[in-house]
Length: 306
Image 1 (spheres, rainbow, N blue to C red):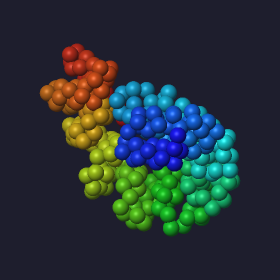
Image 2 (image 1 turned 120 degrees about the vertical axis):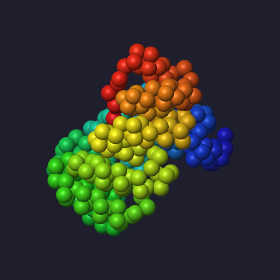
Image 3 (image 1 turned 90 degrees about the vertical axis):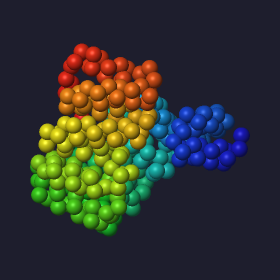
């Protein structure tokens, strides 16, 4: 088997969003090169993309995420000095909810690459998710020291202050991060989240709606827009936000289902019924469309889901 050509083919499939094709080649490559860290890493990356597609179709992404974590662990065992592999294993551990393992991996990566801002940033965010404030602050301070011109540690510091309820400081930091890199949509999404958490949902919507359409119609931005609209009691507009995402992401059954539930909450049964069709097209035979149809048939008014 031509290993460089196989690796190149896998990379191409991943860029084109074709994880099943990437997995077929990666599995064969791993059979031929069972001690190759690269082969294990490529398997893991294909599995994570496949898991994302599973989630969009209403299937459980955890089995493939756990398999990806195992592959990253194998890659790290074969190449224990590669900081990037430990970092990826940490991200994968975070995705399956294994925070202890994620933190250990980020710490290992940071030890292998003392100049890496990214590992300190990921470590700080992992501690923050567990509300380990002192540890989070130390790691994020280290990240900012290593990359003083990067907006990402600044944005993460904003999240830390929001978690502590220091919203004036949080908003100032989040705005500073956006000003440092105004074309990075993730920074604007975090500013929107901080504004919403601070009790300013209308300002959050203004920030998020200013994003380019291709950036606004991503799951993270859509979720934040919808949450802010719901806080303003604009249920139909929140439904429309999810509906717009479902229309541009025809394989995302969860977006269609959330739009349908919110249309029902807004009292628009016709649009909710249309979302049943969207969900069935996205994932034929799945329980997502059937559950939405059940709510329609029963005349149930569901609570919105975050």
